[in-house]
Length: 401
Image (cartoon, rainbow, N blue to C red; front, side, top):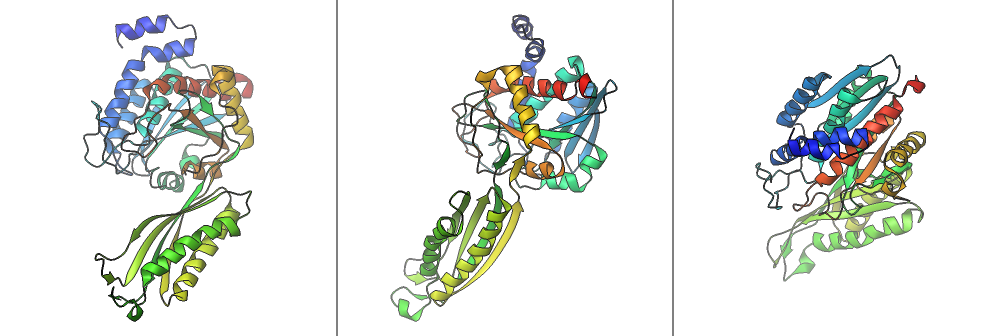
């Protein structure tokens, strides 16, 4: 704790804000450390060890090794019967960092390009305050999840009995969001983030000389026709009032300008807010690929892989989460009419298992998520940690026993 931090904290009237400010320099240094040493999904050994060590030092009962590198910390106070779960993610992305920061990734090809270093730091800042000064009665469970980026961590923790071993009445999580004003919060009741599925489509024709296309079956032409026709799935097979995304993100075919290749491989991502739309995409896209290929004399092999469902926030818990922000931070800190995001989050699985809500906090005018230029905004650590404290104290208040 620095003298500067103590002086700054003394100037703050709100006791929670003041308590967080006392240790804020340490938390920011921790965030920079996590950023400098990022770890990919299910490889978060250093991160998990650091998180577990800090929580144990602060007085939490800590369980490790859940889903390999997951950590769950428990703290009980008073005789309240309610239990609350708050989740943060820990993994990084396979991206070469290009920020030029003093604390840029020292792990080549890996960086925290989504802010999970910040999410972990926010929850740790709240964790320290809650154990030292928190006013609540009940059980607090802090969940540090691995492997969110590949959509496997939450599901694996649940399959290993997360909520059977560590029961909660509700679970909450958050994500920073670039483009939303720094420290402002967004809430969405109902579908808040999209489902995500993937498909690999291989269109196989008959290779030949580029000068004699009539002697070949051109899979490139068939693929081009399919890509154009793909847009009809969203525009003509999905209700205009529903959301659907079908994107071709990768195309690989041939290596010479005068050779018609044997095959083309396409990789797609599909997103939706409802299971009905998701099912329609799964039905129509393979059928369309096969029909388009056959119309050119080619064949299509479709490997359609389901990822994870839309993240659907529970209405009551979302109303509660919003009310906490309004009371703790004021109306100016809450974005009116915050809209759902078409990105995806495996916290969806936790919300299928337990009531809860996933909220958003503005990262300001930063590079977008998953960009090599992205950096988490340290200015949102304090307000977001303060929010978690108020949510925990309100949810586990004496009058809720």
